[in-house]
Image (spheres, rainbow, N blue to C red):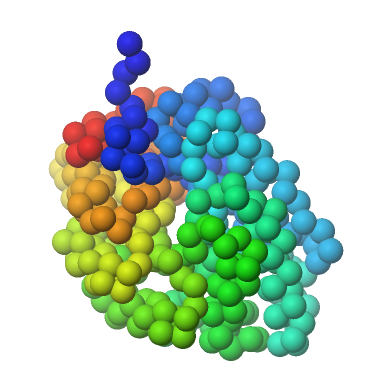
Length: 319
Ligand code: XIL
């Protein structure tokens, strides 16, 4: 008899549950592959599709790592959430140090979006077309895209993305989950895009709890609902909960609080019909970007030995 898995529970509700994945452990570690395919029906490439990795030189794209991840997903019946063509960070030097003109950067952006989205056309569920465009006051971040092209870089990115993969769900991703000036800025931004006829389908809530993000599930619920009124999907895209950020007298209490938060965010997503995708930013505590050498942050739902933590059990209960 096969044991209960998150993917089995999610599938019964037509829901995608997944984690961020890198090519190296996928290639080297059979336990990583087995746990991934057993527990999840979705994944998101953590770094492989970022500009500096997938487009390292002006005339050279490198799809090797991301192809491997997408092939794994297809083989195991997992959906792919793709991340993140236009971002201010993890850009190659040939972009940041060349002082391109507006016209040149527009041509580069168009080529970048169209090459990678058409490469994966029909193979991915969703694209995080523009990542982290906002400042905490809700204004647009002064990325190289904003400074060189102007605020219209966002509309253009979505239009070119739509041309390259008309069937993918196109979303904009940031850490603006609760109710604050940043999420108000996101609301105004996507509302304006819709009014201008720009093909945006959703908003990603990164959900790096206690680090970058809000941790009040009720605020997240309200924010999700106002986006639903605009007709938009919401995806939980990068959830993690380092226990160093949590209240609790000892490790056990912190793990219980971590479990409560994972459960509460999953519950909010399941309760809102416009939230159908829930992604966490790593498979185990050994595969987290927040993980120090001591292992003290323990942000994921599986521990360093790939065993389920209280947060895993809580998510099973919430389904
Ligand atoms: C992080 C990765 O996890 C790290 O491995 C990398 O060194 C830096 O980027 N928001 C995002 C993600 O949108 O792409 C970031 O991922 C974490 C914050």
